[in-house]
Structure formats: structure tokens, C-alpha cells
Length: 101
Ligand SMILES: [Zn+2]
Image (cartoon, rainbow, N blue to C red; front, side, top):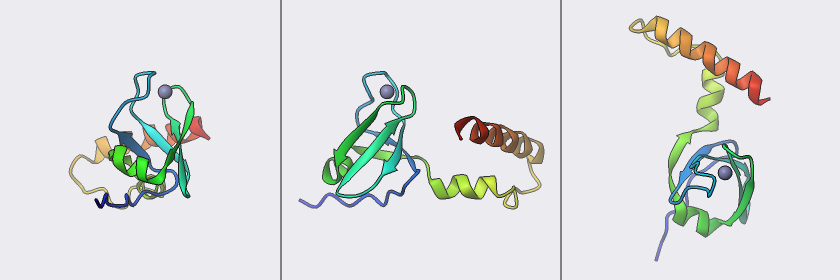
């Protein structure tokens, strides 16, 4: 019976059991409620899923919204190892953020 309620949050990027017909399997949560609205990150279409249907199809998180906020706040969590790589990734992330918004 019990399908666990997925602790999903607004702005999270998730993967579902079946990809979108466009071939992508990356969805951003844009509305939460009795129904959940998902935005296809590839073609930009949005779909509505009932909450239980979403929980059934949910496969995993690609990115949590809170992780994205933390990454944008600055690399305080970056260790000394691979500092250059972390810096490059941070720059790419900032650029993506500008492109998206
Ligand atoms: Zn799509």
C-alpha cells in the first residue's frame, strides 16, 4: 500500500521513471499541492501529476533547490583539494543561473 511521500520541494530538479517524449528525463518542480506541476528542463513543456502519481514515478533528485542556493552563496564548503576545479564549477554554475533567470 504505502508509497512514501517524496520530500520534494519547489525548484527541485527530479528524475522520473519514464522520460518525457522529447527524450529528456529532467524535471523542475514549479508547483506543489494536491497536484504537482513539473517543467521539462529540455523542451520546456509542463505537466501536472497527482501527488500519488508523482510519488510512484519519482526516481531521484538531480538537484535540490537548497543545494543550488548554497552553491550560489559562495564556496565556503570547498576543501583545499581540487580548489581549482571547484572554482571553475562555481563559475559555470553562476553563468547557468544568469542564463536561466
Ligand atoms: Zn520534454
